[in-house]
Length: 494
Image 1 (cartoon, one colour):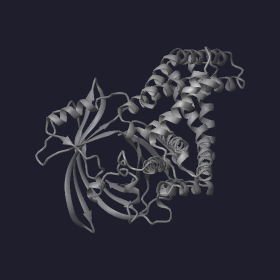
Image 2 (cartoon, helix red, strand yellow):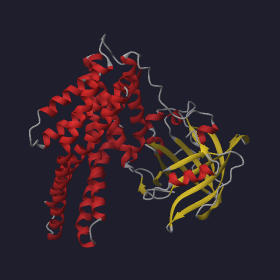
Image 3 (cartoon, one colour):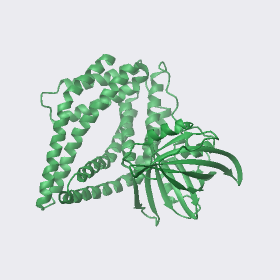
Image 4 (cartoon, one colour):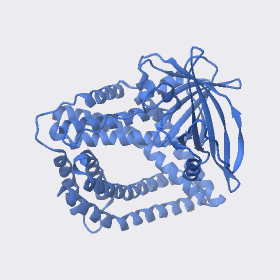
């Protein structure tokens, strides 16, 4: 079931694609497990058969991605599942063709290259369960799955598992249901999707963190690999453009890669690092407008829901205006994500995770984090009584850099570094709210120039006032947060 569900036309293809978020908890069960009584109604019994596709080297599985062709009661569909923070994004195309759709191959461009997709396993799932209801509303599906793994018509293995899947985004009942099911005998699940169990594959994971006394370059390589993997994992979702979190996480990965390269600069050949930094800056600038519009759309949709119908109309027009801008930006983004420049950047990033161009140096991880913190401290100490927006934004940027450098040094600096990182996150959140309010007011004023309606002018005035209130709230909190951040930083970095 869905937390969000949307349908969109896919360019150059006649089939519509639907996209939804999947938020679930998996639990392991023994052969004797039975569902306890749950408030709700029984779900219809189902028997879907899914044939999973991957490369011969399981490139999709290693990236945490699954692609399957599902047949159930005569309906045939292709389903692609992408990682998305704690959730997964499921993209479905109802299609009877027997080969993976070109649309999905396009989304998986970076993961597949020219490699062929082949069937790797067929899973037949006998599913029964309950749609749990609370306060007369559905909140979750609790399902018991009996899985048969088939290959060439032969049964290879069977297993059972329990799933709790949220059916709306408002009610947070999953932890309560999980506790109830654990009391009935359910246990920890290893988190692997069914395909991974069927193929006896481990859950996707990074290489283990280097030991605290490992060479500094080993830690830099590990950090680069972590963020490159994160960027690649969210590239398909950013291409599709249906879940804002995909693009957000891709942009975060880009920013963190730049931060690692900046922090590790004393270890790297300057020309090599600068060239890669320039390319990452280009990618960040490419992703930025789309992300900024996603933030504004989420904010103004929430604001619209709180208005009465009369005032909501002009704001609805404004939101449609932002949506049109976002669609235009997505077209530019898609074009660039297919460009030779982007592909060359990905190639260079992947190479950097194995073989960064380094120089001889005695610098330590702690030195790198200390260097970034001292730059931040200098910027904060130079702030006057009433810093302008540009100065606040400068502090925000330096806070991010100091935080990312601290994350690089966290394995050797321990809990004091963790406490500094948490303080830095809190500062980022407040300064981010300040920056978002500035952007929101800019968008409102630009829209107002195109409107002659008195009602629109009235609502726009209210929205502008709200942005000033948001900035004022942020400014009230800033100095206390900066003081706490500098205190934590001095404790760990000196």
